[in-house]
Image (tube, rainbow, N blue to C red; front, side):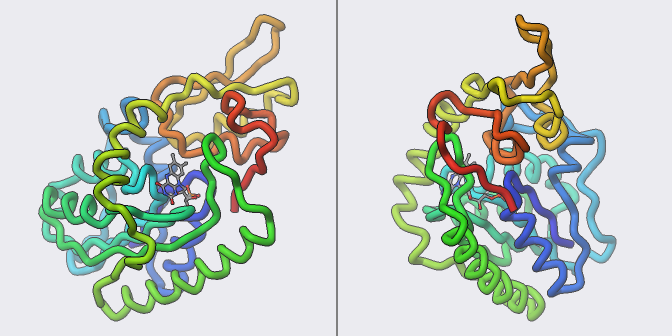
Length: 268
Ligand SMILES: Cc1cc2nc3c(=O)[nH]c(=O)nc-3n(C[C@H](O)[C@H](O)[C@H](O)COP(=O)(O)O)c2cc1C
């Protein structure tokens, strides 16, 4: 079974390719989170109305495809998998992470997660894809994004072959630089000081279409009437900065303070 969480579609794109190559079923954690779960500030799971659906065959491998947030797997994924420890015990877990530039010490935290839930760690594939963090960084232009996607697809093919063969996945050491500084020191600071929703707003280009509300995997957007009587999105503080809303807005009406001004939007 191939599970994915994805803000702008990079991880979903890779997950689809893996599912096609391996003939395995694809499972959207975005939909599961949206329909069944509640998170505190987009990080720690509060509750899900159902456990994670797993294949009956305990020998079937589970593959988790996800973006990299602050040089580790997203914290919401960590807390979600930890909450499903009972079902994941003794299962074989592969991880396929996408990122815009590097993975730091991601592997250490995936190993720790597997140890904590009693699962067998089958390795991590590190796949560079276009940067999607519109609130922080520049997004590559279209030719560069296409080049990255093509190279990412080739890496995903390699990962699919390894998973089919039951071999361990190995992260690219060239993409895992400064693990302690980035993943251990910076990651908690990133969540404490950067991952906040209050800078999001929709400007006059917004036509109240609700795409942002529908696409938000954590249900943190509600539509509220502003002082001019217009229906506008409003962000609650359980946002995890997945960037789905800002990148999918059909009118590019969503901004993150001034940081996103004049930046390209991206989704695949
Ligand atoms: C909140 C946030 C944090 C990110 N942190 C990192 C990072 O630490 N290292 C990196 O190379 N890319 C980082 N990125 C970029 C994404 O990991 C990358 O673009 C990923 O492929 C997006 O996948 P998705 O479209 O499936 O969400 C970050 C993006 C977001 C939104």
